[in-house]
Image (cartoon, rainbow over all chains, first blue to last red; front, top):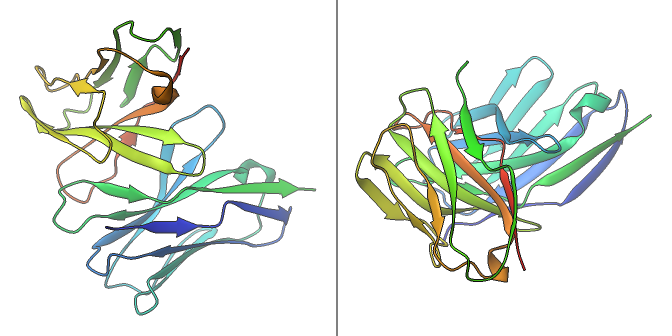
Length: 112
Length: 112
């Protein structure tokens, strides 16, 4: 079945760029998403990319999609302490209505 | 304010004692879904509903029931909870299609 994989931890210094990586298996995925979960809160949609795009930029966030390698990345420029959270990669299952397949989440720790 | 609410936020119960976690959304969304979040596993879908009186199993439905009698409400029922259902539960809603899913704040359930 479909699978989404992410590394579990990432530690960066404040002001540096963070890059969170994700791989997925369903080549027919139509949309790929990045969600952010802050401590004690639900998930909040950060950004998404349609499968016919290679890149999407939104302020400090840059999403890169390599369809050949089924690899998705989220780059956060000028990372701040407020960016500390768990980041989930998710793919919309093809033909699965609204069903999302989530990765395990990457915990981003930002230190001074 | 557009939101998804869940109650209770925290619950400690004993094995076999029936419980219900409520979920309500005020955005007139057709689609609603329940997920559970476990460390290292990300979010896994339990049940979903495409509209009133239309529900279907997700990836991990065993031990759970749902109902959708009204568009705004989608309660999750555990008829006979067991310790392996100790988890963090999220309700989500969206319009049907590749639209943002809005998540509730989560319910942390402990079954002893």
